[in-house]
Structure formats: structure tokens, C-alpha cells
Length: 126
Image 1 (spheres, one colour):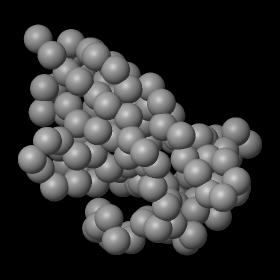
Image 2 (tube, helix red, strand yellow):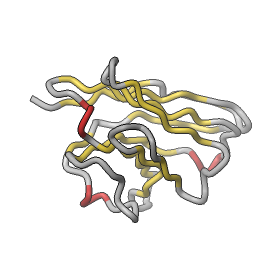
Image 3 (spheres, rainbow, N blue to C red):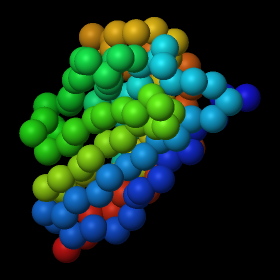
Image 4 (cartoon, one colour):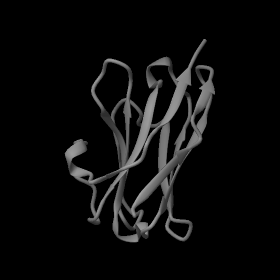
């Protein structure tokens, strides 16, 4: 059974950092592109970042460019999202998601991802 377990969320002050992890079980991530999405209360789910199956290509939403870094360790079957310079507007539930293809889609659309984790809460407070 394909499963993701996200971790690393928590409370942080503006300007702080968090590193999210997305560990897969029941399958190997080697052939999947992986994305991170987030959803704040009352808002639609939005794409944050994506990494190709090889890790050689990444993309970011404009709102997080220069602050967030996505990476993957296929040996550990885990994908990471390093989040720096966090802002209150980054507060949301963060989800990792995957699909069995090598290259990230052109746009961040949830329907391009077949497998989803349960999410981890990120709260940014003053």
C-alpha cells in the first residue's frame, strides 16, 4: 500500500525556518515526481514546489522562490522541503504528493498527482 508520512511541521516565528520531510512506504520513489502543496483555512490548495524523479529539475511557486528548497534522497525514500524566512502567509497544512512520471508538470495542479500524504501543519506566529 502506497503511503506518505509527512513530518517536520510546527510553530515558528516570522523569519524562522522549518524542514518538512515526506517519507514513502510501500513503494520506491525513484520513478515519481514529487510535489509539495499547501492549504490554508478557507483557501484552495496551492502548489509550492516540485522535484523530478531524478532530482535534477525543480520548480517553485513565485511566492516561495528564494526561500524554500526542495530536495530528495531516493536512498532514504524521502523528499524534503526546507523553508526559510517564513512569513505569516506561509501558514498552512503542507502536503506531499506524487505521480508516476519523471518530469514535473508545467503547472501546479492537484489533479496531476495521484498519491497524497495526510499533511503536516505549519504555523507562523508573531
